[in-house]
Length: 465
Ligand code: 5AD
Ligand code: SF4
Image (cartoon, protein in one colour):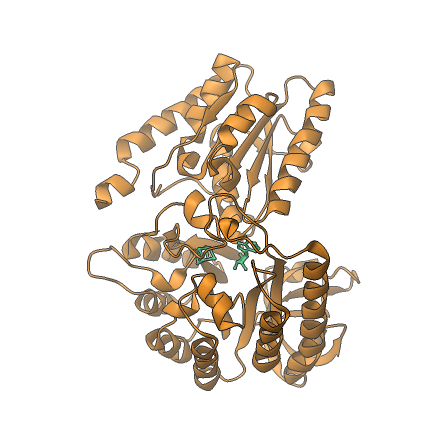
């Protein structure tokens, strides 16, 4: 596809700004909004854009959903329970509206982009006022105007792979910011619905990304998180073939204290990237590298394009180049047909790698994906026993891996007050592990130097230096 067709045009952007002004001028428009977000960082960042657009339409944030005039659910469909939770919460709001008839309810995000979901909303969720997919996010002003003006249910789904630059953003944090570098995914891992709902891979122009990051640096942001379904394949289809490693190197030069990124695909993790990370000043020594399974046959059926051995080679290279690097992963248990022996290969891989943390999931069939028609679904009792064994193993190992930080210096970016004590704050160290340290509200958003002194229940505590 031509670049011109991917970028939302200036005319279209101006049109949406006009709609925003028209909504603002409506006498009975919603005064306040609340965004409910499910799923990944990509969705969290989309919600920041939604909030930005709603504020441009004159709405102010409401802390609780029951207090808002406009509630929007930004959904995820990567696993069935994420979807069920979202739909359950949307239905709950129907009750709130009985007391508050003017309440406006919208549903957007990945779930709406699923085949058949728009029809379901039209037929079974008639109380939903507005539903739109990921490709129409930038059209929110127009869609809200139409909803308010027509008094009818508006459902708008498109199958276009666009990039909308320059949307207003209301960031959740002032100290740390998300920066999307690429959208969509072309990998078609056989279990995954993302390529169907987020469309084809497309990268943002490097100069635009750099300008955005420069703006954030000037605003005093201490950390940026680069986002994409597979950041390692950044640059495909762009003039001059920029690479992720190249982009990272340029961003490193801006002087933003901390740079992180997610998510990566092991098959695209280049030596060049490892080299750039090892020689950078601000790219943090951490890597989220989803393995999904430790068995070669399962990896093949998952369409992952690497073997256990190749994965372990990447891990070894990372550890050699960046000693002490923080490693985390995603793992799926009970992929269709997974035998006990194949599952044990995953356990042995986890044992071998020794991650600092692991996100573990039971396989969830997603309509339209290749795995959904493979047969060999594993019974629930087996799956839940497997995931418990995996979690127990990981927790035990974590108690060991985290010990390497005791006595070490760490810099933590404080996220908030500790859940356990009001005299303590917690945040993430450079290696992506959570650290609790003595402090107060004034420390939130600051980078604190500390020495790690204790490890208890997989939580590190530090002392300020
Ligand atoms: N079932 C279970 N887990 C899944 N993931 C993606 N699709 C599925 C599915 N159908 C997991 C993968 C991915 C993470 C974001 O979600 O581990 O890395
Ligand atoms: Fe899904 Fe695989 Fe793409 Fe990740 S790389 S979003 S798991 S298809």
